[in-house]
Image (cartoon, rainbow, N blue to C red; front, side, top):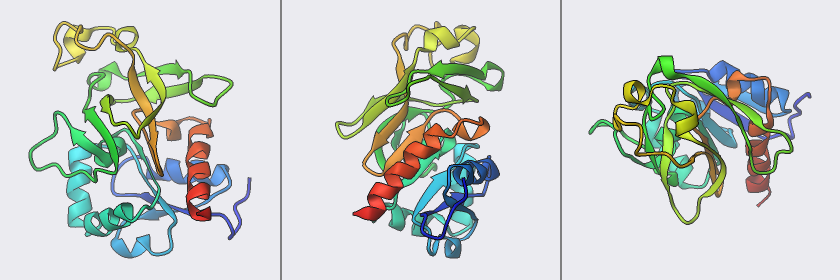
Length: 224
C-alpha cells in the first residue's frame, strides 16, 4: 500500500532498537513514517512509536538527546503512542523492577516487570489470540516484559501463559525461582485511549495487523 500526504505521519524514536523495522511496517500498512532522533524531529508528527531495546539505556538516551521532555509534553497533550517491549516499559506508569534512575512517561496505567519471561536464551514465539483478529498473531518475544497490573481504563487485547512459555522457569525467571508466582495468563498487548503497548515485537514479522490497530487509533485521534 502506498502512503499519501493525507495519511498521518508516524515518528519512530530511533535511538536504539528496531526503528527501521517499525518504519517499514507502518509504510507497508499505508502510513507515512520517519525516524526521530532529536526534538526537532517531533515537529509535524501525528503519533510516535517507541521500539524495543534496553529500557534503561533508552531512558538515558532520551535524556541525553533532549527528546525526553518534549516527548513527555506531547504525550501529556494526547499524542498517540505505540510502545513495543522496552517501549512498553517507557510508556508504563510503574516499572516494578526498574533502576532508581529509570524514567518513564506514565502514558498508560499499567505496572510492568522487565525481562519477566527470562534472559535472551529464553526468547520464544507464540501464537496469540488477539481481540478483533480472525487468526492468531505469531508474536516474537525477546527478553520481554509482561504486565502485572492494569488500570480500569486499560483494555487487554492479548494474553499469554508464562507456564507454557518458560521452559526452565528456575533458570530464566529471576524474581520467581520456582516459576510459580505467575501461572495465570498475563497481558502482553494493551490499549488505553490513544496508547497501545505490546510485550513482543510485531515489527519483526511480516504481519502488520498490530501496526494497523495503532494506525486506526491514530486516525480516530486525528479525526477528533
